[in-house]
Image 1 (cartoon, rainbow, N blue to C red):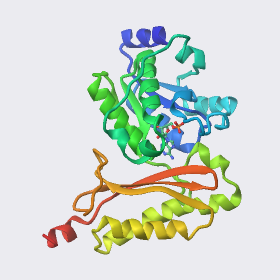
Image 2 (image 1 turned 60 degrees about the vertical axis):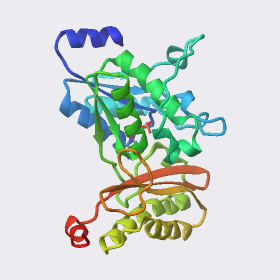
Image 3 (image 1 turned 45 degrees about the vertical axis):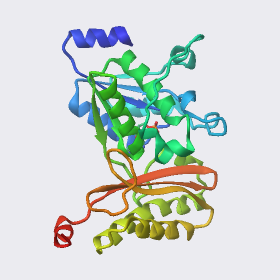
Image 4 (image 1 turned 90 degrees about the horizontal axis):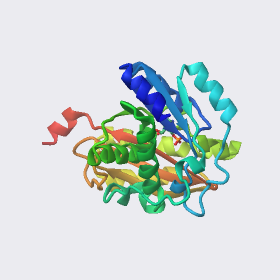
Length: 281
Ligand code: AMP
């Protein structure tokens, strides 16, 4: 992989990289499209990274379909698919990791303590292997997007991080490989995440600026669906993820909810109409 990238770089061809864990859907493919738009060569990787799963999480059962994924990537026009083995990434004696101090102390980092350390470490390795000019990440995993941007800045990776919008099903459910765990009933309950975000946006537009009130409304919507368990609902600063009590500037509303045993995440940027903000002084 490194030799191929060296060759492309020598030929002055730009490389966009899209790391994934496979079981691809339209959300992933939108990142491939973005890559094709901004660079000459698109490299996708598929690697289910054991280091980012906790001991009681779903590493063993994470959905996999390499044949199907390869077909989709070929159809999309992706140039290279990098499929490392676990031993390629973590050979015997491997001992280095990358850990961020602050960003993981919020949102998903609190309920998934090894998650961002696992991600920052594997993405660093993949960056050094693929040597891209650009790397594309979905804002569905908004905290991951911030973690990678911060890591690239802190460690001087010469890579431009490009964020891509959340791709949703027709009814609003954010696409996710983990949606395949849901039975038809749970699939209906999973819509509670998007519905609560949308409602939050509407409450904000109607003039409410108090985060706790909006969060309580969102929680009530989710609780009205059976078989749901809220991990967190937060309204926070979109750069450093610290809680925002009053929404006086665009804010990130992010949530994680278990539907049955499946943990789902979603988010939305809440933006109040500037004129209504200004009229309030
Ligand atoms: P994953 O395979 O879940 O690790 O995701 C690989 C990349 O695809 C990450 O950058 C995700 O943020 C992105 N991604 C996953 N689902 C979506 C979606 N519904 N919309 C946009 N990007 C997504």
